[in-house]
Amino acid sequence: MEEKSDKDKFENELRTIGVFAFEHGTNTVGLVLPKDGKKKYKKFICACHVGYGLAQDRIIEGVTSIETELKELKAQLRKARRERRAKDIEKISARIEVLHYRVVVLKKIADSLAWLFMNFEGWIIRRHCLGIKKGYLVDSNIASAKEAAGKINSNPLCFALICDLTTCFQLCDLIEIDFSDITKPKKILIELKEGEMNEKVLDMLESYSITQCDRALYLFAKVEGKKALGQLARVAKQHYRMAELNTIIKTGKGKDLITGKEINIPDKYYIEEDYFEEFNDMVKLCRKEKNAVTCIDDCLFVGMFDTETFGSPQFAFKHAIYHLLNRGEECRLDRKGNEALNEIRKIASENYKIMDLRTGFYTPIATPLYLWPIDKEAMFDIIFGRIVVLSYLDIDKLFQIASVMGLEAGWTKVQSGRSDYFTRLGKRPFIKKGEEVLLMGDSTLGKIYFDGIRPVSIVKVWNERLSEL
Image 1 (cartoon, rainbow, N blue to C red):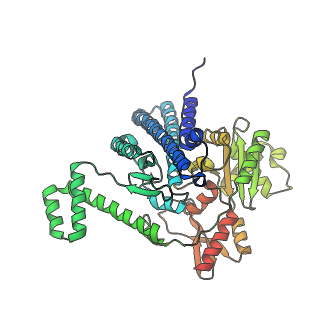
Image 2: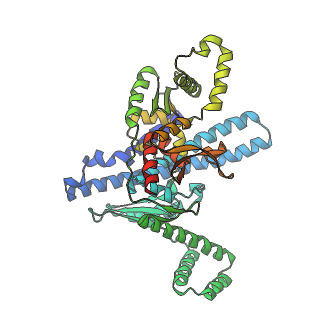
Image 3: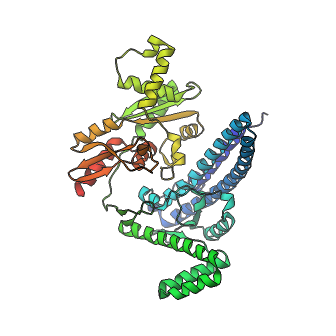
């Protein structure tokens, strides 16, 4: 029998982890809901937790193995660059890109569990994400985190997720979900205490919070040294962030932990409509015709392409957009051959900013693809590039929708120094009603591209929010 390729082995492992994370409970005892009785529901929860634990262990194993190879490859890449070996540089760089993608694909399973624990509240996920680039898992305290999680998980009604396995949780070490009271499950954010110095730092912080004695702080720094003082500052900052997060979650008000700006999260829950029904229809059409292109709300173009048939999905999508926006015009490709091909490529690159759905794996606050209500096989085809899903949002048409709803919309210049999608264009869209203004940023695009939210729904929510300000 032919040995499976490296890619096939990884896909099989990913599928296995996915079954543990998302199907172990139902596979073991069937789907049980709270209304089916406490005893049955507890049994179901315990089975789910077993699956979470098996998935977590496999994610740790997979990520650490990949990272070990990554570190070796990066050392080889540095050497190849010094020696100017172009072919080796290209080959090693390509492998590094593949491995980086595999890491985020694995971590997004852990993200999915975090979303589940937070009841799919995207705004809470956003508050936990500081936009800090995480280091290698193999260089972290993963062994002690795994040990601490294991102690908690010895209670079958509890499960602790290791935050370093996620891309989105950056404020604590563990997230514990506790179903000891099956009617009122608790979520607990845990910071691990490890090492003698960390114990001293935490004792000092606790003492200072009570006494506010600056001399005690001075003596601590003098006795323990600069390193201890630096650790105290880091721990104090972490405690501040955790306290600020708790304030935001409880009151809906506080300071954004990234920008430092005051935030006010409305009590009202806005219902956002999705386009998953259209997406699933596209999957069926793509299976049959090898491609599918549609336009949602007259402004969001979505294309789906089988890569065995379409060697260049990006160009095929841009060509399709061109014809959708210029209906009735003769195809330039039929008329001018290669000259027209180059012309359309130029038009497409200038006018159409295309987003690949897989970019969501690199976006910490994006809804994990594993949680999209889509066909499981289609999901794996997307993950492994057998199907490519591309999207393009026509902002000017979105403005027209806003205008119909009585909103003013347009472009405004923004300050430099930020690196999101719109500021790379040097401007940002705004929506205005009366004197109240909302700016559209990457989080808005993320909702449309990676959360499956309809553009019209986004505008409706803006309209309601601006009306209430």
